[in-house]
Image (cartoon, rainbow, N blue to C red; front, side, top):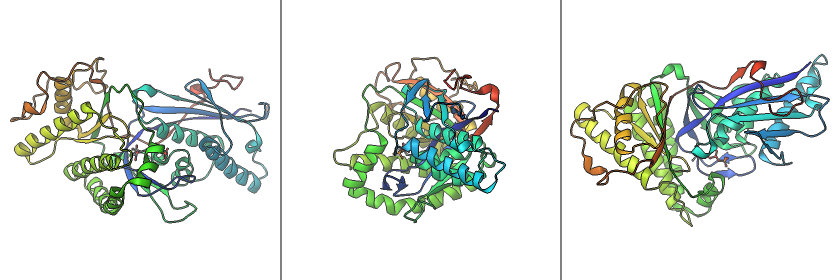
Length: 397
Ligand code: DP6
């Protein structure tokens, strides 16, 4: 009997940013956050977990083929320990259940996007780990319960336990029991939202989010002002999602990204995640919006940036050809654009678009390395045994 499960989990990109912990061990945030889950057809982490009494003692884990130590007390260790504990509780209730909680584990995880692209891989990776172990252990817990475990692997990972539009409620309890992810709306509610990721070249390695956010908590007076603003934004953007009101959604998304980066600049020493190319994309989208509002009264697109220079542009599907044409024109990519939606680059820019926002001579080729076009997607998926990442010996294939 093989006890094994393979699952995939999605990337999520926040529109209300999580930045700051009130408890660094339990990973409890200083504010609630909200994200859009992206489609696993394009970006995903896949994880296989296997339990076998015949394995040598001790759990082993591989990430993209490279073995990672499961350090006692570390984040991975904590997630595994908690889920194993839940399995043990089920076994104690039902003597017929095999005692697989006592078996050593072999876990292999794989991201289908290059880590070098600078996309947050910890969220999808930790969520896939939790989803595969929950499937292996046949746990009865809900996705929100599982999100409390994923949260302890990486805060933003808790939001990847759901598809669609997801809130991480900060909670008030000291033990973190109410700091969990909930679905604001499934993707079917508002499937029209597309995302265009502009992968921006960046040679230097920036400050990690884990370290950066604690520097902010310790030194930024502006963070205190932000913490007063976020609850109103959480309520307003949830309403916008429920009403499928892109204008309100975009306005809040843009404001929150800019406030997050303002708080980074207010940190001592200041943290710079945006670079000139990022700011160039901001100027481009702002001008597209100005021209589009003038013509139609509506915003065209929203930009948001995490702890790095890549832009994520959200827009209704109908607006994507214009965004793609504009980005392609002013930020010619070094690599061809393999668009699964095949929108092309021929769309006209809005009437009255002011080219003066683009530096004279334009951006050099490859300033935006690559575009990734995706859309709002579903939550973790269970895969069949044929998708296993582990060979018969429990080592990655
Ligand atoms: C800017 O979840 O990577 O992407 O909890 O320390 O693992 P840890 O941090 P992490 O931080 C993500 C920060 C962000 C904003 C967001 O995703 O909400």
